[in-house]
Image (cartoon, rainbow, N blue to C red):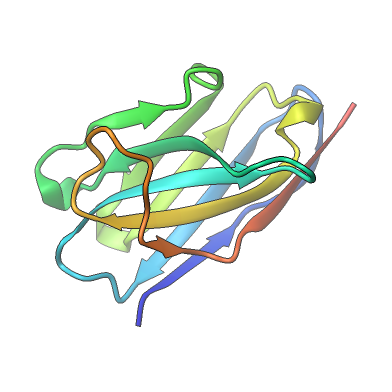
Length: 125
């Protein structure tokens, strides 16, 4: 059974940083892409960042262009954990952040097959 469990959310002031983690288990051998998404109240879910897993032989990263430079996605292959480092946080970054995984590589798509339950991030001004 696939499990994606996010952690690291919380409340910080604007300008601060948070590091989200996603521990994965039960992923099929064909899962080569994982990513982070977020959904703010009243808004649609949007992609934040995604990356090919080390097992694919290509750890290419992809970002939502509007967030590139402040957010960094990374992985710890040995611990089956995905990270999202978020710096210079703004109140507009407040949202539930979700971890997701995809069968196949990331390539040009944000479509995912498996989802975590999310972790709440709140940024105060």
